Length: 411
Image 1 (cartoon, rainbow, N blue to C red):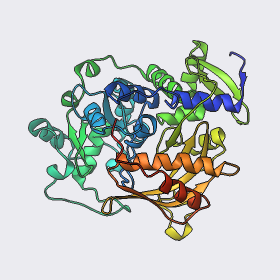
Image 2: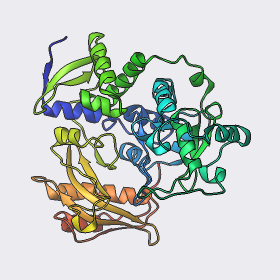
Image 3: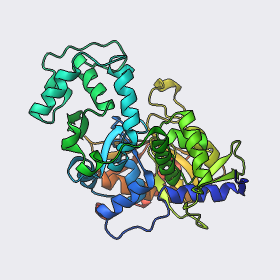
Image 4: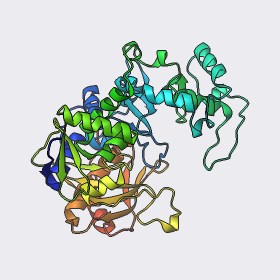
């Protein structure tokens, strides 16, 4: 095995940020080419139903592209020729369609064993009938296929019928695909032949070993520098498959082992990962952004301890309900609890907190500009900072000083 090279913590941060797209030169106008470039960087977009600000899969693109027309993402994911398809890739996520063959071994495992969310083990009794019905009638939601609504509430927050469980089994097994999400954010299921490009469906199925190399290679491109555990987490792979793929990619020269200053575990750098001398950026980060979704890695990279508190009782929350880290250049310098109050047209900053030893005036100025940009993108007319958190007062002053002359244009 190649002896590991030493890497400073600063170099690792810059490499990761560049690999995630935070060093890309902005396009004068955000087009499908811009979207493709950002998606190449992130690899996947995690999907989450929380809509207190904006749904999770839209936000990483805003962080990298600025205000963009979300119809671009719908065009990429919902209409042929599709660039993206939903699957259980990280968790529920949009992934490039070309990764479908590399997920087939995962689909086969779900087909054989089932999944707790799809009713337990084995093939649900309704699966074959539902598959035939979707083939006959075309794309449909579970609700459309389940007029009897045979529903139970045996898990907190869930209300899944036997139909929904069987459809989820077929989705996980790759026998159905997701054509789109409807206005109620429900999955619309259809056959893979009507969702995916023929070239993808006709592509040879790699064995588990080759599929693992494909996924680890793709994860390494998006992470830049990562431990084996982080490479494994990106596509939620198994320990054995990841370890074998990492070793083979090191032997072929795709990955280089490195010891990053301050990290406890050996890391691996993709040989094509950029290593710029500096990063200049400002971005609000979704809790589900690939840059921060693995909390231990976030602490290694930025010294930033981050926990999402959506499921924490209100009186026990430290920073707020839906808290976004704020990235400024090469550091995470603040965090803000945000809510889009669509009824009143306001972007509410419920709390704002600065990280230790930052220039609060500089941070507040840069953050205010991002908040106004986010408000314009979301179609909101005002930004209101509530008096909670040690950054709230300077941020409120900066927000008031930065009121735009007109609504920001979507570029």
